[in-house]
Amino acid sequence: MIRAAAIPCETALARLWAFIDGELAPASEAEVQAHLDACRRCYPMYDFQQAYFRLIRRLADHSEPPGLRAATLQRLRDPS
Image 1 (cartoon, rainbow, N blue to C red):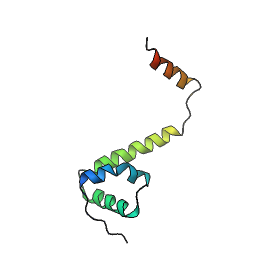
Image 2 (image 1 turned 90 degrees about the vertical axis):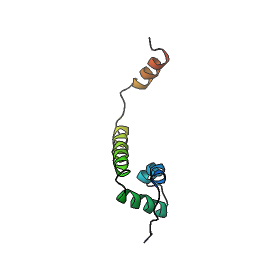
Image 3 (image 1 turned 180 degrees about the vertical axis):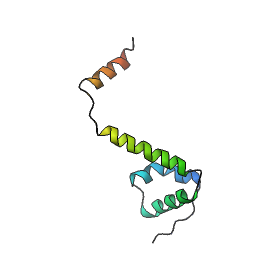
Image 4 (image 1 turned 60 degrees about the vertical axis):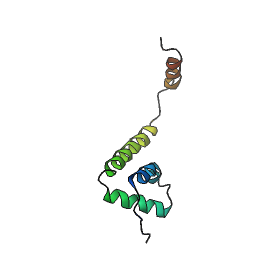
């Protein structure tokens, strides 16, 4: 078992996306998890970002209607 050292909020939040993505080394993951388990200030940010990430994944699974990308880019180029 990996023992998690106490890390400051700034460190935990800086590692949050990598933690959610499962990209941290086991020791860093354990540090962030231990911090989130104990910190009432950081846990809501984790909870929000995790929900946001799930939404983005779900939206990415849907394909866009044909021509939407081209029409959007055209409107960005010529907003009038």
